[in-house]
Length: 239
Image (cartoon, rainbow, N blue to C red; front, side, top):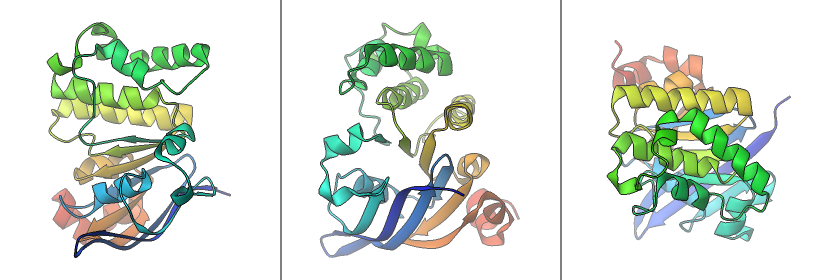
C-alpha cells in the first residue's frame, strides 16, 4: 500500500492569454522518484513554480493532505516541500559553508543541522574540499551540487529539482545521479525531477510523465516509458 504525498489535479496556469498548463494531473507516492520529462518550454518549470507557490494557478495541489493554496511560501518550505530551481539561486559572495547554512535558516535543532551538514559533505566531497570558497568562483557543476546541498539543508520530505543536469559535464551528471539514488534509497527521500535530459530521468525515476505544450501526453512506469517507441525515438534517441 502506497501513500500519496503530492497530488496535483487539473492544474491550469495562464501567462496573459497564453494557456501554459492545461489540466495537468499527477500524483507522487511517498518514497519514489517521479520524473517529468519534455522539451524546453513544455511547462515543466511552470508546474514546479505553481507547486512552490511562486505563481497563480487554477486547480488543486495537495501536499501531505494540505491544500497548498491555503498556506504561505514559507509554510510550504517549513512543511518539507523544498524546491531547487533551475537558476540555483545561490548567494554568490557567500562561501560554500555559508550557503549551506542558509538552507537551514528556519530550523531550530542545531544537532540535526550538523548531521545534515555532514551528510551533504559526504554526498558531495567536492563541497567539503571547498567549504570556504565563494559560490560565484565555482564551476557550474560544483554550483549545482551546492544548490542541491543547500536544498537538503532545509530537511525536505519532498525535493523538487528543476533541470539539475542542465549544461553539466557527464562526470558531474553521474555524481548528481548517484547522490539522488543514495538520498532516495538510504534516506527515503521523495524526489520530483523535472528534466529535459530524458535519458537521466529514465535512468533514475520510478514513474514518469511526458509533458508537451502544457499537457500530459503520457504517464507510466519506468519500464513503460523505456519500451515506448515514441519516447525512445523522440526523447532518448533510440530507434
